[in-house]
Length: 225
Length: 296
Image (cartoon, rainbow over all chains, first blue to last red; front, side, top):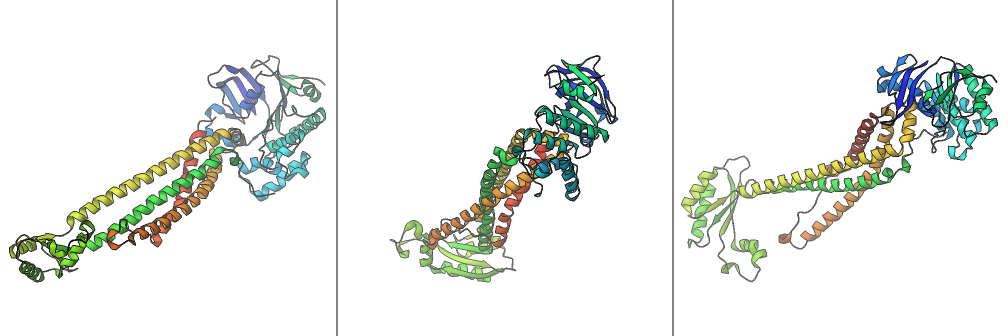
């Protein structure tokens, strides 16, 4: 599903923020990405989410070598990826419904078809009564769930989440992680960046650990709960 | 659930406030320039029509030949082929022509005015002007024949210059409009960079983002354009009233030709907001596509 070989990345002409990253995420896998602030977690997730291009090395997603993919051909690949941002990135003037419906509208799904899908997903995250609510009127946890609903509404093959539990209390974090587990059981490949080592331990999933832009040698570990 | 709106909150950037005002000004100026061109063409056509097919024969004032020269010239004109009529203009009427410059203190008898003959050419006939000049000179020495070509040439030059000036003004207005829309679009792209990246990461093609900017540019340009058209129409109406008022002072002191736009002229002007909208739309699209091409 995702394969990196000796990947390096820099922003503009700055120093490399990721160096010699080699990893592989198989279809249906569930990984945590850990590391201190500034280690490069968000940059790695942006590479996986096709928000950035690598400066060097090989990146392959869904069997496509990104060095050979044209810019126009990235759009259909991106539609297979759902992203949960650390800061949610909900569009404030759109309702919860319209925020969640956006990936489907971008993909050209007809309004009549997307309505039931969006309602169902918002119900799944426990926000069936907030369809018309604008993000600024929602709590942090509710906004996070709208962001998750938006990330999964188009049934992505790969879900990338950057600190999805960073802005919510422990109970809500646990609830969100259960939602991710459900998704994973449905076949979605997940990679979740988190500071919360305890949470990663609790879910007993392989952990990729980044330090100063490099994956640690024994990074892929399965931590026993 | 309401109908889906634009994903990009355009109402929150300065370009959304600036573009309608700018389009208003552009359409207003373009409307005035276009109206001037159309009215000028009509006026010139009228002048051309009134001067073409006429000749003026001028007999010198101080020949001492009196009406004999006039009779001889009239005889030549009546005998010439292609002449429909030849009517002498009496001294009082000739004096009236110079009255705006000389005033009314002098009587026609005090003035040594040339005698004029107003000649109308037959619409289907062909007058040999060179032969006619020669015959007139022989019959009444010193007589000149004016076919108004000099005046018509001057008019044509004036018309061409005015048209070129108006077209240059229209092109400049269009250029400024395009640059303004491009600037506003670039500002919008910078202001809404996060949402545009979000749309891209959801799998939106550049054309999807461009369509959002196109719709916004069209809406704003139409709002400004319609307002500009209304203002231009009001200004043109006021101008037509003003030119009429000037001509009411007297037939001989019509300083400005009366502004008179016909139905199709107004129809052309009414298209301006639509043209402004389409230009804004196309500019927004090209600007967005050119800018997004540089993103990953």
